Amino acid sequence: MSRKSVRGFTLIELLVVISIIALLIGLLLPALSRAREAARTTACLSNMGQIARANTMYQDDGDDFMPVRHPYSGGWSNFNHGGRYPLQGSSVQWACVYPFDRPLNKYAHPELPLGGRPINGSQGQGQFDPGLNQATFQDPKKFNFPIFECPADKALSSNYQEGGGVNFQGPRSCYQAIGTTYMFNCYWFLQLTGHPRRGVTWDWNRGTRMFKRARLVYPSQFVGFFDDPFDATFWARRAPRFTHHGKPDTNSVSFLDGHAAQVKTEYENDGQSTLPMYNTSVYFLVYPEYLD
Image (cartoon, rainbow, N blue to C red):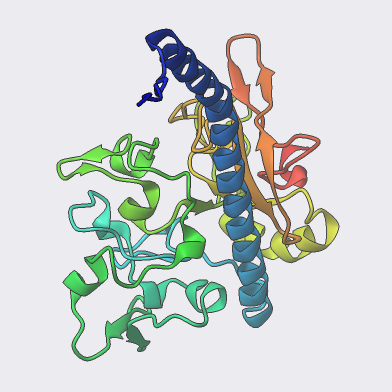
């Protein structure tokens, strides 16, 4: 009785197949990586657009005032406009307010509970709902507001509020450290040192009066929010060139007309150093009248 022989793969054939698979993986992985980054960028810009629209609703209800929230310790903040309470161990927890005191939360996330009831206090702060305490708000699984978190904001991102993203508890993303990835643009009123135009005085009260006109005249260029870090706003801190999305000098921003886009920082040279520009043909960070 004859026996049929079964031919298997030779070692050379197996190696050829493995080589072809490895080649295909090498060709596909960069494309997949680019696709993932494009998806993260799209999600980030969607978040920023929703924050810009929430800001518009807030201004409509508040006589065009901006959502610049004072921390419980006093002063002002450009990151208490919306988002969560920081995780336990955040080094800037003292400067953060709870979700129910972040004014854009109820506009950006009307479907989510805020965990507190507003009362009239010295800082306008609210109080916890029954059964809640500070630890509840520090729980990463509770009271999250995803519109305020960029999907590319990882624990090793450059986060100046936490000294580069690292504190005694370990790395923090911006969202984990201060409750939001996105900063409110307060640089239309600050007088910053170290810039060629540092002699220009930008006044808070004057800025709030101008804001209504800014919305109507150049809202499509005036930056309302940006993902941290945006080089053009951090002259003194020398923000790194590579931002959350890994592109040199490129950040996601949203404008006062409600649209969001990625913009590239432009630079000027005063003869001694090269520094980011306040205003460009694409974006305004301060009122053009201040630079006349």
